[in-house]
Image: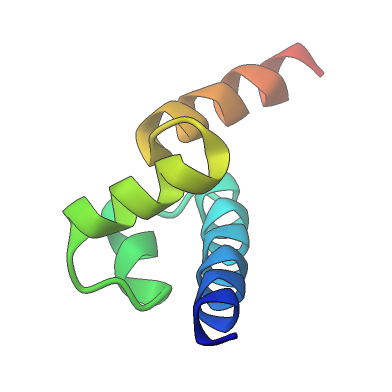
Length: 68
């Protein structure tokens, strides 16, 4: 059960990170704001949940915003 709770907490943090990145906050700052003191670990966890790196996600969001 402990692992499931940790995974759920990380997932919530990544969802918050996605919102902050979409709002234009730098990826490095987002990592810090969502409780990841190590940017490398943040990137690894982000990719695990989304399938892409935070910087790739940010670039995708910019392309999506332009096309709408």
